[in-house]
Image (cartoon, rainbow over all chains, first blue to last red; front, side, top):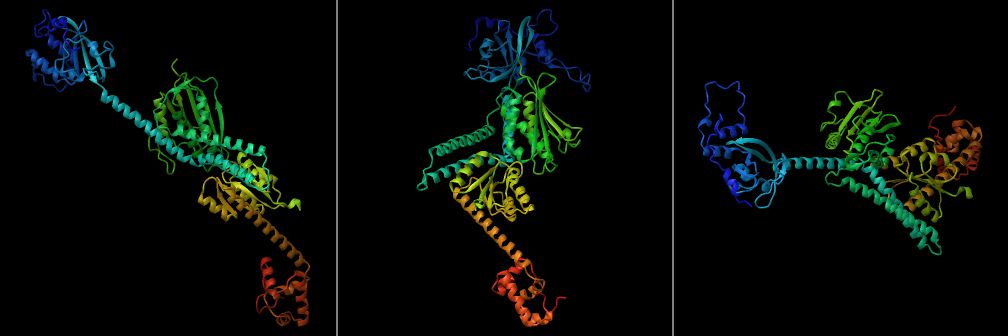
Length: 401
Length: 213
């Protein structure tokens, strides 16, 4: 479809003809639009340089345009391309000069909207292109100048960064699981131990000479084995979800459910550490949009930190998990403890990477938590409690209606 | 003697684990009690009944080691069989040093568990038999006269009647009679038996060359 429309030709007027009554040559005016002459630089010498623009030829203009790294398209009022520089033809995958007379919608289907859009190239492929358009008057005619930039590389970098965030979050989840491994092993071991003992008891009952093992007892044993097997399966299922590596999946979430799920994951660990969790969950909280596993990860990080901060202090190790509606109609979740608190010098740095006060800590937990919360459009909070201990939490915006 | 049937005390916070262990032990003809916490066990435990404890290490309210320390503190020397989710070496070392008879890793094979439990019960019965014997010996020692008590350390030291008589300033025949009475009252036949008994009862032999006052 790279043919040249007959009317398009009419617009290919000889460029250098000065528009009558105009103080500037059209070319000059065009260039002026591309790059308005800067205010005089304080270091510029008065007499110094004379611009060569006064004597330009059409070839000079073309050279200048082709030297511009930004793709430029000049479009007439009917939407046909009348000029395209080298960067633009390359960007849109056309041979040199191949764009002239092409309707702009054939290469930029969403033309008319500034911002990012997909191009349609000659070979049918497509690339993300950022478009900005300006109205111009050239040679006495109204036209539009489109500046095009290939943002493939930019998008790729953004995707890389997002993937890195995902990977770091994943690694940090794996590390956190390492910390919880004792408790998890216990949770898996209990059903396995129960299954083994039940099964071996049943075997003994069946093999014992002269013993009429009652069907009722064997049925009970089998029912227990099935139930225990399911229990182990649930632990594995939870682990698998926790360790999955996919991208974040933003879905509407009831924050209190996320809080309860998180606490369920560390229940055994909390019990063993003698931590006593008090829940103060607000009712009728706004629904938020987020990734369930990532938000659980943040909460677990806060809860484990709170427990660590109370390690070695006399029992009971009290800790509170609170949720409430935030001032801006979102949800605020806080984890409060009675631990050693946060040193004032650490407070401004605690969400930075590699900041840790734990022996053997990597200092990644809170920085990953902040990344996660910020990628949800929220913010993390931390303060020292006047009554002792720390309060760490986050705010998430409510879901857009 | 039915009150003296050994009991296996099961302590685990998970009722489902308890139920399974109960089934296994009861089928094997062992009496059990099921306790979901160390506290519950300590409240119900009757130290006069022989038996053993099968204990989960990772209970939330008090770890197995805490319970062990508590029992030791109370001088209730019931044998403990530890079950642990992980083969945590320092914990197992502490448990064994604290007098645990066995340390098994969960999930545990029924044969290994029964072997450990039967071993623990045998250990407890032997301990109790020894304790009974010690009590008998202590009672017998109470029946000795002051004079017999006086010559006991000399007998333990292996001295001859003649030597003892000289050291105590009595005639040899008197010593001979005392020796006979001591051996009779304690139910012993040889000086070797007497030495062993003295060792268990912390009766030191009379030092050589010194006459007790």
